[in-house]
Image (cartoon, rainbow, N blue to C red; front, side, top):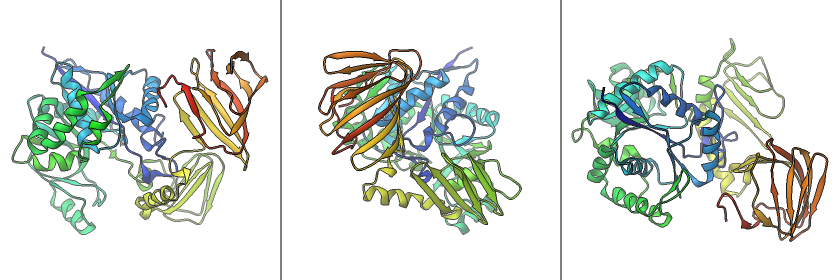
Length: 474
């Protein structure tokens, strides 16, 4: 039996602003656990493994992400014990058409012309078997040269999605997000499906379509890919060259222009799909009580209906609420009408305009070496809890404006201060004077946790001069 190559491509960019305050640009929604026991990104990767079959040579996943999230991608793949074939790192966001083009160029560079199965990293599917069956049919059509879109069978008049109008199995037209009256007409007429942003096609077919319809994007992406660098699984296109790539979505650049020019088909998908684009969508996929209330974490809900309460760090109690969303994190609380959940992005925009850190980072910040959690802060002091992974190390660094005390809570710390290197165990501590070169490393096989007390005239994260760094940060 002939086997044809299939490459799963997971698009893991994006900031998920509508799911603030849980989703932040430094830790966006695709890496959050919003339903089930794994993150949306991990679910997307795992779902595509169902494609493995006797007639399919399934490659390791190809991930498209960015520099800031590269170690989140690797950590979450390690949890799945599923190493990637490569992680393509966009130096800056240019929307989905350039991202898919990089994936296609990477695939063709392997010497094959595989079928690319492209999916966003921030969706959920409740019926895995139905999803896999639809995807296998799409792969079969794509292996024959077709462009195949997965269209979600609509169960309501939805105004938040674009639609696909079909003529039998063929795509007749892509339709923009409609108003409610138009969406109701689509639902009544039949033949209209939600555009889920998932598509299947050969790498060469994508490049051919792009070169015909948007040769500017194709040429600029080729230029950036030609000067790429590679560090282990990380593939980095040329930054200056990629900055010249026009920003455009897959739909606008290619898909909407394909009917009549290419063999473009739609495969119906009825698998309990949801893109979790806003808190109202999260409420829809969560388990609810008899009054329609969904709760996550330590929450008490009384005399309320159709609410979502998500508690992260403390007890949250609500009384007498209807159709309201309450999201609690250690440093921010959101209270919003469910029907206005799409407008949360305006809060994030305002936080960014005011240069407030809450739009980008949680109090607990993940780093390649582990994480730190800001516990308390004053005008001239700050307390953090720090975790360093086994074998990991912070950069060799110094600070102009602060001194630090470190107290080991669990594990073993190798501490470099100036020319001295010491080992510290539980309940031992050390002092790093202002301006002194220092480094923290975990030489053990268990996580290292310590308390850091900073004191000085300026305590911002940008007061770091790095002399040497394992993770390539300046």
